[in-house]
Length: 120
Image (cartoon, rainbow, N blue to C red; front, top):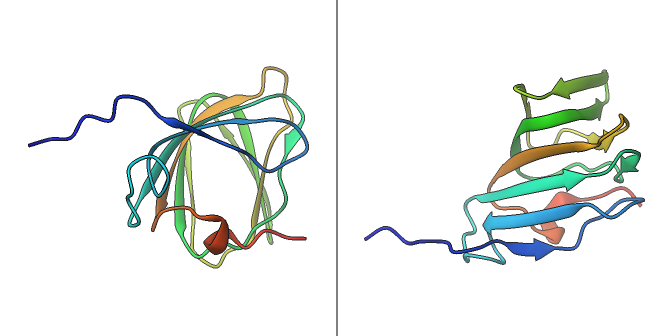
């Protein structure tokens, strides 16, 4: 029988400004360790520390623009676009434009503070 996830768990975010993270499936809300699915809402000017995660991250931008810095430069990912970051690849996410951004992140395996490896 399918399992209804009635609501997400709000997760504390990293970065210079508050960002809303709504985890629907993952280690915290549903006990999934193989995948996590979360909706993010970040304000204009939000910037998080760089990271070299152990997981693959697929991010679909719903509104606004998400900037993804990587060792070779940066990508500006706009509403209706997606980006895939490979495990072991250094990335840093930010939302520099007015209005911030809303996006969905899917991590395989599931996100955890222990497997994200943020810069100090």
